[in-house]
Length: 290
Ligand code: NDP
Image 1 (tube, rainbow, N blue to C red):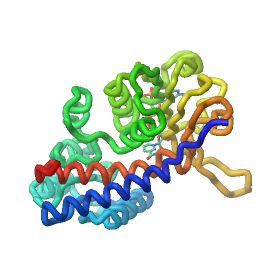
Image 2 (image 1 turned 135 degrees about the horizontal axis):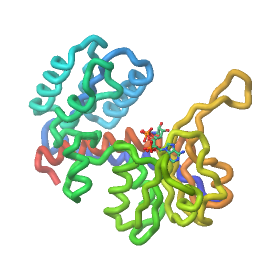
Image 3 (image 1 turned 45 degrees about the vertical axis):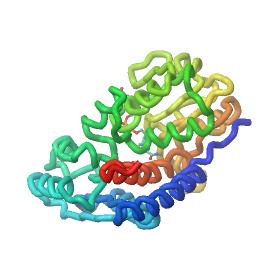
Image 4 (image 1 turned 60 degrees about the vertical axis):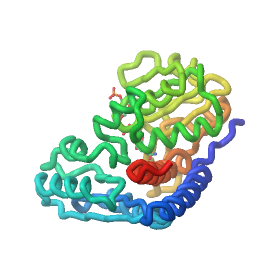
């Protein structure tokens, strides 16, 4: 039976570490690190995410600047706000909650964020810095996956890693991070042929697809470490109820792998913890504090 990788516990530890780092930062800089979160419109899921980010910030001792704008906000007004936040010395990190309303060009807005405040790691500059090995911010979800992998496996050098999914926010940065750790990296996607065979050679599998329990236990190499990024809501056994499952058939994977992240309680809690980690790092960099 595989071990369950407890992302919830790891994230709690990371948040505590950040809280201590915030106290030390404030003693030196005379201010707390600040995160600005911009929400446009009334999407209920986005509102929940923004609330939990705000709460996590405050708990960590950071300043949280919330900008909740109406759905009809123009692109120009939103870009003007980003400009103000870029210039504001109290703001170390800027996060624009996606998706934005349809009349706003998401890419244009994200690209307007100063890369030194891009704590979500979504700008082209951040992706380029990661790809070329320069200091920058890494998207929170793949960064969280890497932390869990390093905690579990230590040195990742020479390991064979398969990432299923090639999105800009998870799959691609995950591949870059594992390449930086000297893994031999394969990126699989919807056109990959014989996925079972591709996955079968991997010491590390990261599934970021968005298809419930798609990766089967029988596909895994015995002893593999499995990171399940997927969050899928499916009908539960009890009529009318739903539950969350990942992209990996968890029970099957537990029979074959050495370690597996559960859904929920695996990668999910790491994302906000890494956002706090990135915000503290941004604040330290801006103030020249090691
Ligand atoms: P995207 O939809 O942007 O990307 C999905 C990727 O999966 C694509 O590259 C797609 O390939 C690939 N894919 C789709 N079908 C198959 C298939 N049958 N075989 C192999 N590959 C396939 O998703 P995201 O990267 O944004 O998210 C992935 C999952 O992770 C989702 O469940 C999402 O909810 C979850 N997530 C969780 C987070 C967390 O905090 N834990 C944060 C972000 C995401 P192609 O490019 O060819 O279309």
